[in-house]
View (cartoon, rainbow over the protein chains, first blue to last red):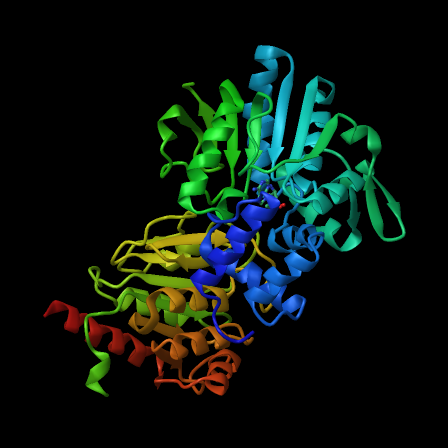
Length: 275
Length: 198
Ligand SMILES: C[S@@+](CC[C@H](N)C(=O)[O-])C[C@H]1O[C@@H](n2cnc3c(N)ncnc32)[C@H](O)[C@@H]1O
């Protein structure tokens, strides 16, 4: 498809999806969402947005595939190493000292790299046993992948570098078992993690946490949706719980920014101070 | 030079560059007046895991402050924005910028094509695209998008560019309004500045 996708076409698409599949992409950020739709159209050789909608009509099960393609799953272990060291040195020890346990939610966990980083961090702090971890994503197939927790050798190079920048104290690869070019995380490391499909847009708060990581997820939403989702994240935190967003995101523009204080501005870690 | 280019209706300037572009771009930023009014978006290929240092190096000589925008930050007149390491920078309708971690485009993140295309979509004929030296093709299709929407396209003269693949690739896929040496690009913007003083 050569020409631009028009806003009216996008509206028809997102409305159709909302009416028929109960997912709401209307308030995803325009430029990246349009690119993702275009990508699907090119990948499957549809001729237009209409043709894509027709495909949904004829074959509703195609929708899950669409969700997988439309979402951006790029992730790394120990992405932004200094973020992880501030969790290790400041945030998590504080929670443990206060409550002797910690509940963590990875919202938009993608293929699980962030969750694995967390488990390794907790293990090295000797408090993995004190943690309950929930990891969610909108995309069923990426959650299946996260559960499998196998990583290609190609990606492990970067993961290992990040771990070293973070100041990890062990042989990184010792946390994995290698098999035919893939690295599997040792099962005991992630046995406390519950992986689930959950939609931040349509879903409601389901529990309360001491720490929520929602990194590089809300950048795909427009400001209206960022506001809505932030309210849900706020509602899912205990008072004085911590929220971490991506290193290039901000809460400043959100309605309820005043219910948080900045704990670490560089690493974008906030604390809920008001209900 | 055709005077029809020198008006005060521009909403943005996007600048792309890779290998060999750092020097001419720092020079350009140093020579622009502090109150140059049009927002500038820089998309330069840079090391993925070096979060700091780059912006400081760019800023040393710059007359204007340079910012790495946060996601959904509002575009303000007269600012210089630099695409952060490891994120694509896009311009959104409604005068904001957004960031994305979508896969590499032309082997790059940030990719010049994405910044340019999104800016072309939003600013249309009120956009100037400038492509400097570089050793790959990133930016060429972005320049085409700018031209197709009626914007102005400028490349650094391939003769002068340390690496000429980038400006040449743009020239192959679209019409280039001006092919200029770096210093002349600065002069172009200074003439434009005058149009805004009136
Ligand atoms: C770029 S990844 C971020 C992964 C990880 N948090 C990181 O920072 O490396 C964004 C993830 O958000 C998920 N996502 C997008 N929309 C969502 C929604 N409405 N609810 C839950 N997850 C969503 C995508 O499926 C994708 O896996």
